[in-house]
Image 1 (cartoon, rainbow, N blue to C red):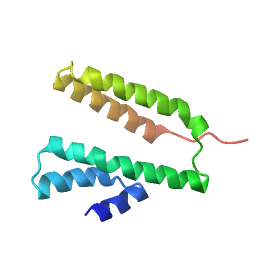
Image 2 (image 1 turned 90 degrees about the vertical axis):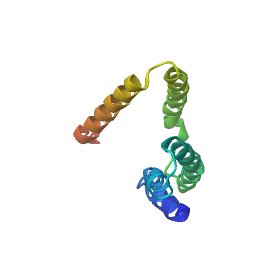
Image 3 (image 1 turned 30 degrees about the vertical axis):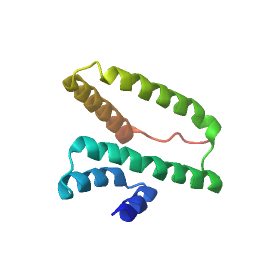
Image 4 (image 1 turned 60 degrees about the vertical axis):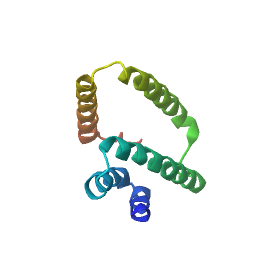
Length: 114
């Protein structure tokens, strides 16, 4: 199953969500443990994919550096904040983030190059 999910992750299908489903539904694992395993599964997969894309010349770190730094800072900040906020508020905030991101993706039109 790990090989199949790694293959799907390499294609960009989102094997992590399938891994959580497999662990919770088939192996009857509690969701918190399944999410932790999913995060550990994702890290080496993402590192290998980034390395291969970089070697192909498709990944340029200089334009990505501000997003990388902002993402790391936000992850650290909200990790600490999540310990203080009730779960219901966190769920609503995450749902709002998903709605905004999904709407942006639906309405996004690439800029035309001159």
